[in-house]
Image (tube, rainbow, N blue to C red; front, side, top):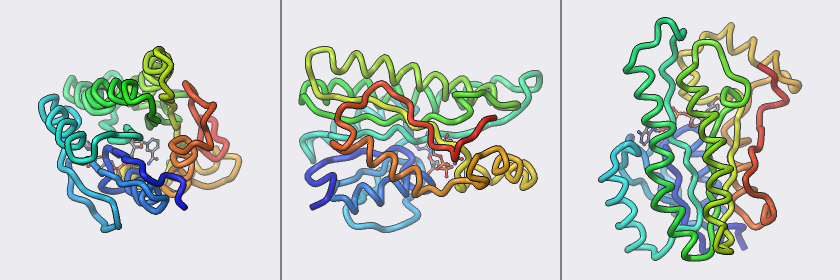
Length: 240
Ligand SMILES: NC(=O)c1ccc[n+]([C@@H]2O[C@H](COP(=O)([O-])OP(=O)(O)OC[C@H]3O[C@@H](n4cnc5c(N)ncnc54)[C@H](O)[C@@H]3O)[C@@H](O)[C@H]2O)c1
């Protein structure tokens, strides 16, 4: 018996990094997982199916939604995980840097959830998990665009927790705010900064993708059946 038996899960940005760890763990726990990503899947796992999707493409998201619902009949779990960084100090940040990050990290989350949330509401069941960041909770130098989106995702989480449960549906919406986790997104961050971030945690180290996946599994499963509208900080006890 898996904790997600008979569940259909969509994980955006599921081709690698945190999305991969989440997709693999959900599938291991019995879910059928659709890893929706702009890139190709970088791994193979039973019951994880890649789908080429850009979450900023409104028409593409609609087609994805129609196809998945036709094929599987429902979506029980949505993990809004796709995200990018385009870092610069505010005085140097270009319109492109600002717009790209808002488009993927905030509008992309909205594009997915405005279709899948109401489906869950009418099915009477669902769990939505939005991947925020420690940067959305505390802010960070050089990441005004990213911080705005990750704080925005926390606002969306609380709003959707209210909206989709309004008619008595068992739809829960929570966020995870990871600290610094070893994935490609940190490739551009200099090692001395990463060492500094590790020192800012109570545990004295950066996180591993699997440590976010286990939190996502908890929020996706009925083990968290009375938790909604919350942000789970998974950051080794970090203060920025
Ligand atoms: N790694 C960290 O330290 C960390 C910390 C806090 C929050 N996060 C968040 O976790 C999420 C996953 O990050 P990661 O570290 O795994 O990054 P990653 O760069 O390893 O993976 C991100 C994935 O998202 C996909 N993606 C990007 N834009 C997309 C789009 N428009 N449509 C569909 N897919 C798209 C990429 O192709 C990639 O597969 C992001 O939202 C990130 O902001 C990461």
